[in-house]
Image 1 (cartoon, rainbow, N blue to C red):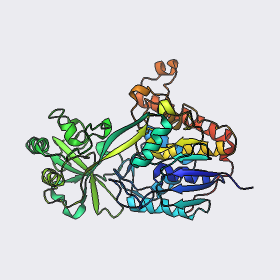
Image 2 (image 1 turned 90 degrees about the horizontal axis):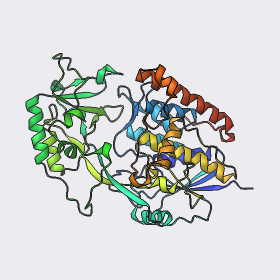
Image 3 (image 1 turned 90 degrees about the vertical axis):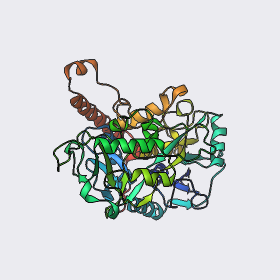
Image 4 (image 1 turned 60 degrees about the vertical axis):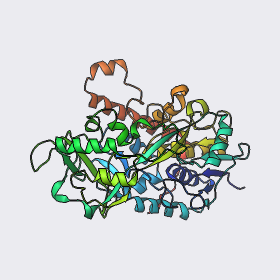
Length: 452
């Protein structure tokens, strides 16, 4: 008797994780990836799990929400987090990866898995009555597949626009004008910091506001995700908004002067060779020539060689609260699952998390058992709970934060005033609930090992 076959669309972060979770539980997977047959405005390669924007999977500081999410995923046997840990680059208290090494490690594991068949072709049709399909096509879903998703969703289909940050060559940075430090000295001093005086900041700010943006073409209404605003959009909100956002100097004392700069631009290493750095939080929608002119006003980047300029691209996602159950199945089409950014999570780690759960839940349905939903008190459970239960009329993609997790009971809140201690207690509760869930699910029996 043949095992069920899962049809999986998209070999990005969520798709690769979902494929691995299905395969390691004995199911066959047909994994579709349209690149290189059809590329996207943001991808530069045809590799699986290519990181398009930042190279950071966020904080590894103990008892933070991103740390908790990753801890749960590691315990559940996440392939992509194992790959991220193995290809990590210095980034203070964050988990950042070497993009190329990370993607290669993921591809090697997926292609070596005998239960996963890879097809390099674009999917434009989803038969909701023909077996199980997981749609993990990502924020850059093709127009044809977007139309098919709109058909399945009955028109409940949304989009927003996102940006990616520039990358500079390390050898082109004037190291005499910058310094290495991590904010508040947390973690190791792996970030390059470009300090501004007030005069330098004012000159940069005025040039940024005067710079020309790329023509909108068919982007008549740019609906940016709030936490990914281009720097020029942030600057238009007031002269000091950048100093309280991506150029915040707090906690970044210059060791050469002993003082806090007026503003700071942070650069984070792109790979273990440290031969290139990205400008943290500096996504923008300016013409390439304008970017070169304005960004070279940053102290230390006067002669910067840009390996990649900032760009704008469309991010597609569904109105998950209206469409999905907490098992990530469609309410009207239970054989169709959604995973990753297209289901309404925001961020690399969150996308991998949604892919992991979609794969686990799809395995249950494929083997004719009801999915055992992960507890609400876990970071994984809280993230998916938000996605599937937010206000459908005002739904926006979300990162993992403690605001999504259930609060402590009233007595604990009254007894524990310190916020950090409250967060620690939430983490303890979450990991205990995760352990109970893992023990209760037959899908965690005898998991297969992740290859080295």
